[in-house]
Amino acid sequence: MNIIEGINQRKSIRGFKPDPVSKEIISSILDAACRAPSAMNTQPWEFVAATGETLNQLKSDIVDSLWGGKTMDPDHQVVGWNKESVFRKRQIDLAKQIFQLMGIEREDTEKRNQWLERGFRFFDAPVGLFLLTDKSLSDVGPLLDLGAAMQNICLAAVHFGLGTCIEDQSVLFPELVRDALKIPEDKKIIIAISLGYPDWDYLANNLESTRIPVSENTTWVGFNDA
Image (cartoon, rainbow, N blue to C red; front, side):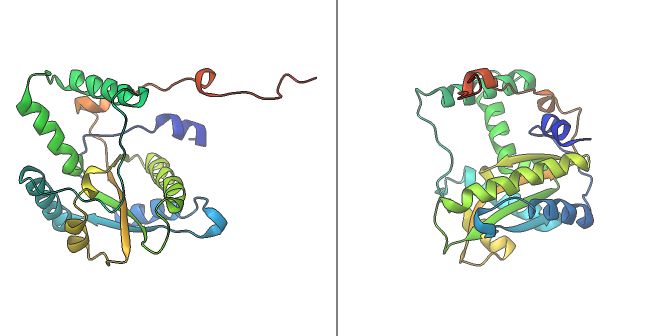
């Protein structure tokens, strides 16, 4: 598989097999993450890989906090979109595609809540990866570098036949994550990635999300110059 094939094959996986992922494979994936570019080679990323009973208990605690009405207080501002923007429309279009695949009707509150909870359970993946940075760094700068590391994780996972789903649901209650995974207070919890072997029988994994073509989002300058 070449790089372009890996990029095109990568997709968000929302249903996983329970099969464990070896520490050796995860280490290789994180080695690839560490090869990501960063501003002046600052490498502002740190990782925590969790599995087994520790992760299962964290999933349970996060779900309890979700339905218990605990205030979400992430370490950094999570993604938000203006309700009238094209970005919000794309989010809604994606949700409609998923709900159609899963047979979830708009009025079915119970099934919608069940789907919501899955995200807070790492989509039942056997491994949760957490990307951290140091609180001494700016709020914005390291995010570009962590994004590059995050992409490397997702592409390396494809190489090993694994699936990933990048998600902020699992870091919306950072103190739970900090306590469960013994993360120091001077580290900022940025994002989580669900990792495991895809369950291709799970309907949501059939989703093929669309992309805006280059012809619509790229301005070409100087290419027709004599």
